[in-house]
Structures are given as structure tokens and as C-alpha cells.
Length: 237
Image 1 (tube, one colour):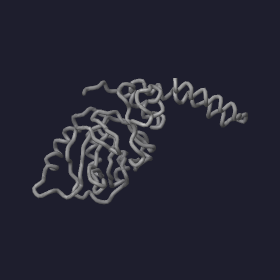
Image 2 (cartoon, helix red, strand yellow; image 1 turned 135 degrees about the vertical axis):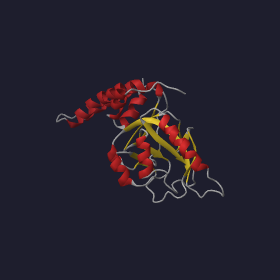
Image 3 (cartoon, rainbow, N blue to C red; image 1 turned 60 degrees about the vertical axis):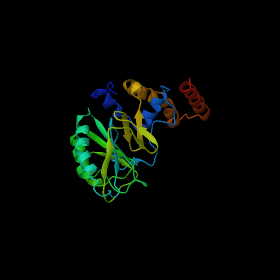
Image 4 (tube, one colour; image 1 turned 90 degrees about the vertical axis):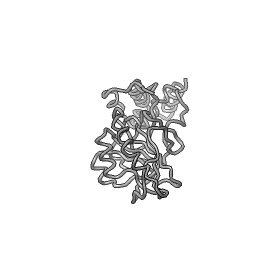
């Protein structure tokens, strides 16, 4: 489905916030349960120093298990997949479901794959498996998220692309807007995306009196409780 995309200024504003603030701001719109819309902690940032990334999902499924005799479909799919990535408007994040059981037998992304994806407008890769070549990919400024690093690419190949994928029990669809940093990965609902940066500023505005009171020489626990309860009542209205 074609959606209105955020412009460069809107995306830059979202990148200026960390992913927990993005998550808190989404709650203000009451568009989904608070325990939905983010990947589990098992899928973590492997290069946390890269900082926040924001982009639209381009999706794939991969396996690294040995192929059956005569199975060369992965090679055929690779060219079509790269054309698919190239054709999608950016910025993009390559989202991959590793279908092996257990996942992580072999890496889809290392230095070469990260480099071509960056050339095609991707700012990072998020997988339910395991990437590799961390030092080389860090030098690119390209973000990697996964279960852990791994050594080999084994027999890694594409199974399909351009369809919804499931990472850690969470479905990510092509063109989903993703925000991710060292804390994890959050899916931004399209319905609130344009207003989300302002909501992030509101979250920080609401939290500021609590922080200022805690840092004050005139700290009062009862005053803190009063402010905190007032903030909670507003967020539940």
C-alpha cells in the first residue's frame, strides 16, 4: 500500500530522539497496546555507537541451511531482491527474518552486503538471525541489529522478499517506518508519524519537572509523588 512518507526534516527530527522517547510518544496517541509495536530485547543493537536510525522497511526471508540438490533459487532471487531494494524510496532499513531453527546459522549481512545496501539507500539491517564483520560495517556507519554476531555465512540465501516478515514474534511489513537505536527497535504507526516529533517534545516537557525536582537542592519526595501522579493521570486520559 502506498503511504505518504515523511520528508527529510521530519525524519531528521525523529532521529534526534532516542527510541524509548519515540515509544513513550507513541503512547500519547493511544493507537496500540503498550506491549506491542517493538521487537523483543533478544534482537539488539550490535553497533550501539552508530546512534538512532530511521527508515522504511524493505523485507526478506533467508536460510543458511544446506540447500537441497539442484536448489539454486537463492541466486536467482538475489538480483530481483536488490532491484526491489533499489526501487524503494529511502531512507530504508533492510529487515530480514532468519527462518532457520534455531536462527543464526549463517550471516546474510557482512561487509559486502552492508556496503551494497548502503549504496542502495539503506541505513541499517535488522535481523532475527546473526550478522558479521562488525568492525568493517561499523566503519561504514551502517547499523546492525540481531541476536549476536556470527562467524560464517554458511549457505545463506534468500527465500523470498517484499512480504511481511516476523522477527521475535513481531510482524514487520514492507514500508513500515522503523526507529531503532542501542535500546532496540520500534515500529512507528503511519497514522501518527507526522505528529510524532512534536509528541516527543511533549514527552520531554512532561518529564522535565520530575528531573529538575530530583536534581534540586530543595527535593521533596511528596512533591515528586504529586507531580508523578499528576503526570500519570494525564497520560491515561
